Length: 130
Image 1 (spheres, rainbow, N blue to C red):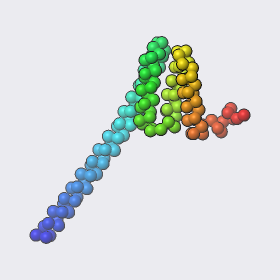
Image 2: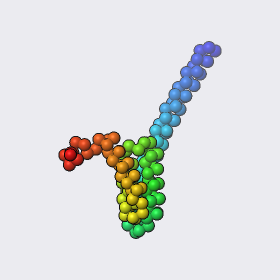
Image 3: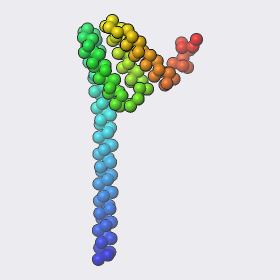
Image 4: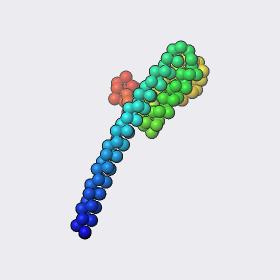
């Protein structure tokens, strides 16, 4: 009976390991799908904001850009990605184009510059040399 018990435990352990591998594979697949889905939703939100901006719907454009910024923050977690810089730049451009809040635009542009500095973008480019 001890041998039978050991075989049952081995079988149980093999099943547990297989279930664990399947669960991990499902989780990885789900995470990959979520990343792709979030990227697609982010891109669509940016496009909607651009369409709203072109048609003069500044408040709606601002809402879409802020939504895209929130998605970027969810995806990347920090304000250091180029996607965050892109959305910040769009928000700054919106403030200037709508002639609504130049101080807010300045804040967005400063955030973009900080991101570029953190990522060392443009420092090796001779156009940025003093």
